[in-house]
Length: 430
Image 1 (tube, rainbow, N blue to C red):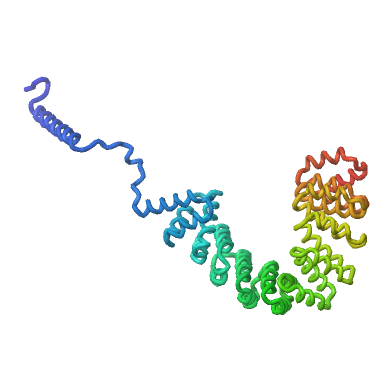
Image 2: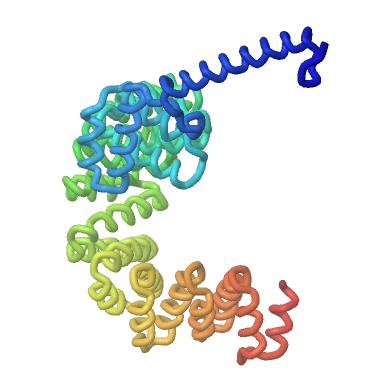
């Protein structure tokens, strides 16, 4: 029997399905009434931060707001944090990509960290993955650390594992120069105890200079013992330091040196140091030198120091020297003034009346301007009257210009007043 086209037997099954569907729908309706609506965007949100993560981010954000501000503000924040928090900030910086911003943040962090706890900062610097970042961070630490921490940093440097030889030498140089400012005995002992360490010549000179200020005779003895390794450089430093605290003692020592070349170099060093403090005393000392060659070198040293300190006085003094002694000193003054003020140097050179004086100054000015303004250097080189000196000065200046700006240099050559054969020669050389 069929009812509404559905067999009775099948109708029972259909009824059961209908009832089940009705009950499921009813339960779903109940859930809708009891379960709050959930926004579909929840699944794309970041998980809530833990209290530790939140604190880390707050410290990092605070550090960022102070980056670039005066150091005392950064120091105040970093001092208020513990070692772990400072390390956390470092790890947070390292999580960003390697770019100038990351480098800037590392520099800010380690420069300030070094002033709080340099040993801790140096240890943290060694954990950086990149060799260049390790080197730069270590340099920031050694540069900003106080002289009082230099001895400890030198010990720590001996145990550092991931620094190349060049980086080690550079860091040792920084620490030794600082250490010599407060404890020359410790600085010289370090150099004595590490004969295989290639301490830089400038560092050896600086250490000897600091030693000379405190004990001139002992510094001379130490520097002479280092001559085989460093030449006369430490000795010159010792003389300079001694001369700054006991001019008579240093002068008497220099005069007692028998080797002419060595005495001339030491005289030059001492004269330069004297001139930085007392120009008139340096000039008087120069006049007492009997050997013309030695006096010429000493005058050059005085000229360099005087031109750096008082260009006008230096310019007037070198022009007062005897004609056969002043050429070299005039060159030095022109070069030194040009380093500070090229325009002032050019004006002074233009006032020189004597041909030999003007040639010497023009050639020195051209040589000094080669690296910064080769076009001007070419112009000054061409004002040298002596043919061979003019040619040499011009070729140096023009070659520099051609390497920096070949188009402009080539265009200038085309329209320059140089003879055709000279132009052809220049083109054939390039």
